[in-house]
Length: 239
Image: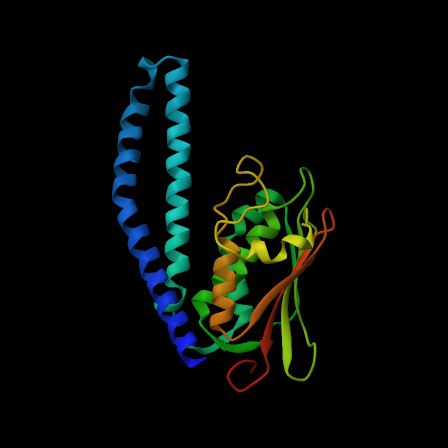
């Protein structure tokens, strides 16, 4: 059993190192593609309609690739670049996230309601990323014309654990895909319907697990979703 765990840890380290190196090395040729695309765009008047269409597609593909690389780097750095745990006031972290997302929330007329949040031991930067990813998804995965309504709250399941929950009124999903949505590059919708790389929830899951917690969700199509992170109540967690 011990040998198996050691082998798993070694494989995880190698995977993280590969993801980091691959993502880093891909950025330079991608920058060249984007630079040449910008040069072509400056001369787009000389192109015919098909040429301008090809240029637009190339530019869009390069932008998606760049977003994918950035997300892959974030995923590979969760453990290697994490900060030591300290006391974190989740209310302050949430306030910063909402401030950063102010323009998006105003544009979508999103309503965000939240209760009093506790102070916990954790990595403030990573916890901020968790909240931002979950709230961003709640805003993004909405039916056309529907005002996003997001509720952030805590609840206690038992004497040993407590939950941090993010609930929304979005499009929801079939729970048969529950395991799939937390895996890297897994998408339930096309790029045309909803933008994104399919890594956001995988990053959330990895950060949550680094904090000794786990994440799950309750959802159904058209009924919204509730994502809950279950933390242990201990001197190293809930304060």
